[in-house]
Length: 174
Image (cartoon, rainbow, N blue to C red):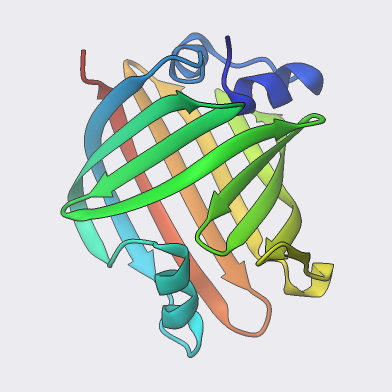
């Protein structure tokens, strides 16, 4: 059974390339590689990142992404060096809902060359919906290049600028 990203893509007619289909096939998996993490510094960005559990800044950090089925969704664990960021993903009517600490994002997939991009379609804090004005401006993409899954995840907040950006590449550990 496919994971929430693959199900949302199918619901919206977004075709995933073979490597991304493998990553999003709903099985427990581990992928390894490296990533570069850049964090925003304007107050209160560090507090927001801490609450959401995002990693510290670093260049070419050893990265391990573990995904596993959990109930009606998936749990993703991203290990950047010694830091672990966990989130839970669910498919909700063609959208991916991903929870980080007290935050929950709704994401809508769209096709891009060689992969998929996800656009923010909602944000909740402690279960309360926040107005669009407060939603992060996100650039989120996954592509398959050769035998590696390449990711580029960036988010900024209106008036505050960069929240976080992490980009890198991982390959199956098996």
